[in-house]
Every structure is written in structure tokens, then in C-alpha cells.
Length: 93
Image (cartoon, rainbow, N blue to C red; front, top):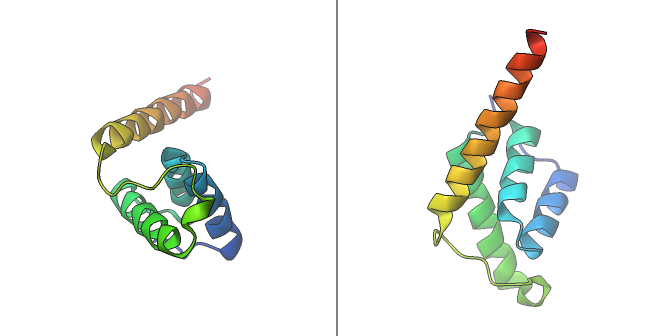
């Protein structure tokens, strides 16, 4: 079961969003809450859109909602698979 993100985690995620590091933000959210990939992606995109409305001057680039996300999701999935494989290899050593 996923847990709600702490205020500290939300601040870290916002900092990543401000810097245009959406994949890093999604990874942090997943690790910190146990959310699945789709849920974390949607949460991060919604947070980015909401935060952009409040403080657009803090963003290095405006957040995109859904544009180019397929590649981002693919990369995030690939990284997750590689990390999982490395963990399994480490356990079997």
C-alpha cells in the first residue's frame, strides 16, 4: 500500500520539477511512497501543473502534460528493470 508523501519529499520533488528533472522526481516519489509508475507519473505531472500556476518564475522550462512522456516512461522503466536485475544478481552472490 502506498503512503502519502511527506512535506520534505514534496519539496524535493518540486525542486526536481523546477529544474526540469521530471524522471528523477517520479523515481523519488515512487521510492518514498511505494506508488506504481503510472500513479507516480500522474501525481508528478499534476503537481508540476499546479506548482507552475502558482510560481511560473521558478521553472527552468514550463512543465509539459503528457508531451514526450512515452520516452520518459520507457527510460524510467528501463532504469527500474536494470536496478531490479542488479539487485537480484547481488542477492545471488
